[in-house]
Length: 138
Ligand code: NI
Image (cartoon, rainbow, N blue to C red; front, side):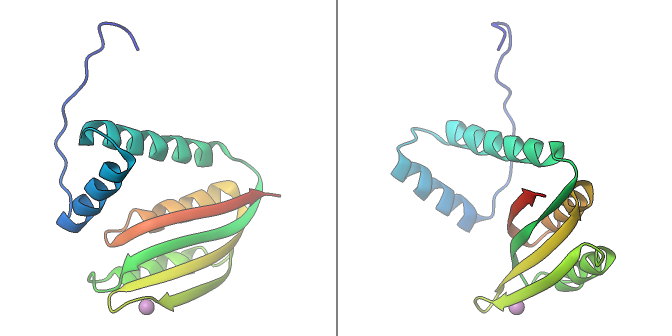
């Protein structure tokens, strides 16, 4: 980082329960403030996404998402997206976790770019809380 580069202040909103969980986790780890923890979390997100974006060729694996099925229209939207990518989806397993939360494991095999597009379309929907991709190159 150049000496002249200053930090930039941004404002973000959090659902209260997410912020509570975040604060608890960073307190246990020993972070002194939220800024450093948020920077580390964002850095991890960026590096993971960058890595996924640079992959090419044939891949296979599982996309795992945790979502709130009470978010209006979400379940239908997730199904619509999966129908659009039926050519790379081998199967989907749906688990009703709690009253509100569902876990979906989507087995995929196909072009890296297609898998990435599917992953992006699913993870960017409001109500999707966690999206993990476990992908191997073939
Ligand atoms: Ni469910």
